Every structure is written in structure tokens, then in C-alpha cells.
Length: 79
Image (tube, rainbow, N blue to C red):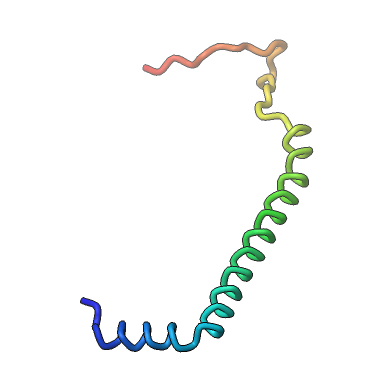
């Protein structure tokens, strides 16, 4: 359970030092917003760097078996 004495002390501190409380809230909000902005920038930069590579590389490579003249597109039967 929440200790009522601790809550009372916290509320008194917040009310009596309003300027300090507002400054603390503003600092935390600024830090979180800067963190979100830089995370977005890094994610965007990562997409800019990886998208051309993804477009150039094939997703599937089809090769003929050694000794065969043609590529056979068939599904192996499981016994």
C-alpha cells in the first residue's frame, strides 16, 4: 500500500516549490521529446541506407543443379 506520510510529504513539497516542480516537469518533457526526435532521425537514416540495398538484392536465387541443362521447377515429394 501507499504510505500516507510519504504522499503527504510529496504533495507538500510539490505545492510549496511550484517553480522548481514546473522546471523539473519541463526538463523531463524536453528530454523525452529530444530522445524521441533523435530516435526518429536514426530510424529514418537507417531506412534511407537499407532501402537501396533491399531493392538491389534478390529475395530468391534460382540455380540449376550441377550436371543438369535446365532448371526444373518442381516440388520435392516427401515419402
